[in-house]
Image (tube, rainbow, N blue to C red):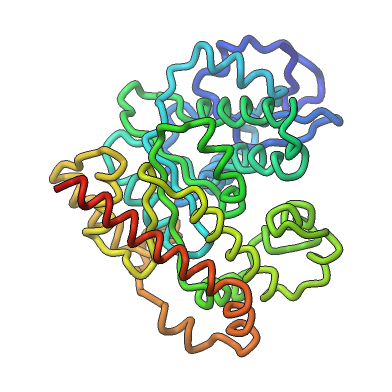
Length: 353
């Protein structure tokens, strides 16, 4: 298998065995060839809230840190020989709704791997929308590559790892059905929030997925409309319609193997119930660690800022346009999802009795 070292354009041959302990850190195109960028991350602690933040820290600490480019088939070969964990649980979300807090709670468990919004996974999942939506050979290939990317990121590097969680980007919710088909037995969580509050949060700090000039094709597929219409929408409308689709998709696929969780429910007891939903019984020490994680602002790299609930603030600052878009596009799907959450919770509680 040929591979291109990112610091040197010359081609070298890489044995797939040498990729053990290397993680795919991005899905890229190099010299017109689509593939993956890999980084040696043996012994590296994924301490930042997001996987890519850890990658950037490593690059800053050692600019000459070697990175390798391979084509996607490396994932298939590595899957055959790697010592990887099966996913313990998946975390999906509708954006700005507490999913990072849940991921950090999972990270507080001893010997856990938590991969949060890794580009290698989410870009490959996005290919279903932009290049593999016909249900043909490409869809099958992307399913294999997504499975391989998750497997590669779940490699044991110390031999002690016991739990493995993946948090997907919000746009990956659009492919929830396909992800379910790849891992039908993995329990999954969907977090969501009042649509007005979600729109306010996204408009106050625009995420990349909400920039039509970069993601028009992906957004058009999510919204089931044209790229032209996407480009003509205000960001408030675009956000409202996107989260409405996320609500609707979660509603469609929610079942007994899923948990629906509203941001307003978040608390220490609920975080512990999520961990138990993932079939993990936390120890006393782990409960203490989760408690500490729940008190910190989840996206603070340095874990110094205290968590402060902000629902009331976001409701106060919501503009008339935001409220109009939320009501027109997202309130109905949100209310249906709330009903489904109550139904599933009631069923699960009944089974537990």
